[in-house]
Image (cartoon, rainbow, N blue to C red; front, side, top):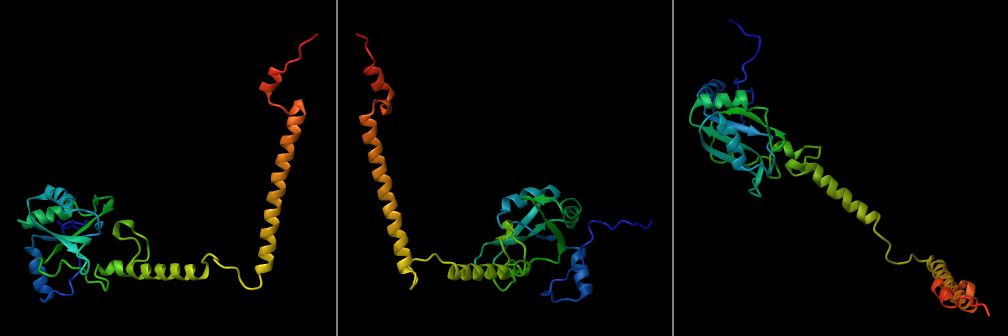
Length: 221
């Protein structure tokens, strides 16, 4: 009986550019593959977290973390290898598009891990998708590499154009000096006014503190 709903265990149409075989050979490899490619991971997701989630579909043979080619740090993908092809299909059915570390992860059948595929292929060492990503993603290092360079350049320009003035521009020295002297004179007048106020308070009992009034209360004769 024909079905109008596509099976969740069907691999995507993606083909690894480094795969050496034909499309027919790729289809045959996928038909017996026990390996999954897992993408959209956070840079901070650990191998233990991946194992805990993906082991729900079967016994895991190994997990290969994707690494930045230059920094050798996680860069948001991995390979999960099972012992049985049926476990990999179950993972695509039940774990694909689920959340891990507050991110929706994607899993797809892979033709098989080869040494060297664990490294990012972007110019900066990470994944190509992070090379040109325009949005800010805190789980994947912030800005994409191209946007990060643009932001750094913009900050340098702002610092150069709006850096705080540490010296008085020529022609403004006299005006600044007059303002400084005027401000100092005002502070001097304020200090004199405070001293005069204290003297008046001593001379007039009405300006004394409440405790002094109580000590010198009027005694009738």
